[in-house]
Length: 144
Image 1 (cartoon, rainbow, N blue to C red):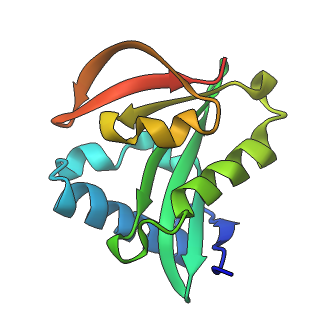
Image 2 (image 1 turned 60 degrees about the vertical axis):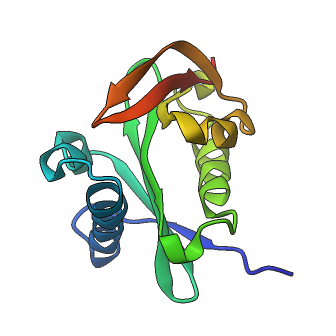
């Protein structure tokens, strides 16, 4: 049986959250060439940050931003050494399980177009046209 990740909420500015930010920087800025000034924003100060731990390492990260109309999931990233092991899916399951009681269970995200299938498995539906964000094609998705 494959080892499941341990998923924790990491308070902003904690050591664990800082390791999550480091992983985001590696994935988005170094691998995907997102400008560093676009990767971190003011929402990081108030977001709920989750990290997935595997084999003693921060293997995945995401954030949840509370909005009046929905919860916005974003900055989903998995370390290249841990990809293909269900970490993003495990994090999504945890978010949907833990936060479905808020704002009527309405979730929103913008997915890199090649990642849409992951979110469709959790009931997200594409709406609107493809758009570019940080030079990467994206689609808006929601559960409502």
